[in-house]
Image 1 (cartoon, rainbow, N blue to C red):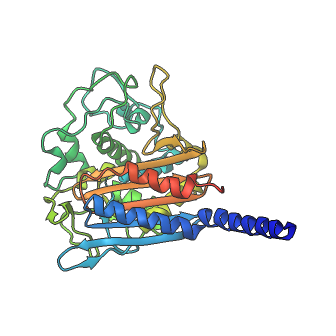
Image 2: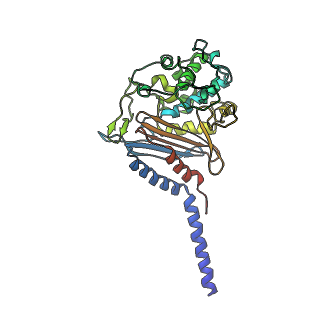
Length: 359
């Protein structure tokens, strides 16, 4: 009897050990995430999606789901298929801004008017930092501005909102908007005396090897670019994003965004000091934390570790980029459909790759 009990204990211990190992293994996590991804694609009726995940600087999972183009059927390739990344563009802008801070070409605490003296005067002054943190009171889109299909320069785009009053006294409220990043990109152009897209290409894309990330030029039919859908089988209307490239106008692949996310974990193009100003949450005058730095939402995981991220929603695009510095994990998800809420799916992936623990 003693021998039987001893054998049973050994067996159960062995089973328990294997189960514990399996639920935290990379293969198990990927298998679980893949099931979630297929369900998400099906439930949200997304034509095509690309997911890439890295850990410790290495891709551990990169896969395309569905179609970049439905007719003729063209599958998503996470290394090649170009999606609109929408507001993840703000994170890219923030890294370029950090470089200008390093080079002492921009002081975040200086007034916007220090760089753009001809910008129409408002009831309140506001700083570059407030502008990048959505605290300046600049308004968001109204009417059909979100879907404007007229190619404009950044300077021309400012005409859409420059004469409007601020919505509130700066730093008394948080109000997310994209026009603030149009203004921010104009400041960056003026301060550096370099066209914005050239600036980003030289400071970020080239050094990081992001060869598949670029301005969504409405007059160029890029190879490997996905079609953009508002429903599973209905194409979105055309849109010109050139003027708002800093806030939502880049094309990229999920794998290129992994390279970008890894730079946030271990920066090589900017100093940690400059980067920290982008990934540190700002505060209102009341002392309330906004949960947003410059170009990055800032939160903590269930394990109380740092998490930097940004979602994006554009014409024919719903996206999310998640960066976990302590765990050394980056997750990027790009889709070619408008109006998909990415937060819940992001939380599911976070639960799989970050929150899971050994039993």
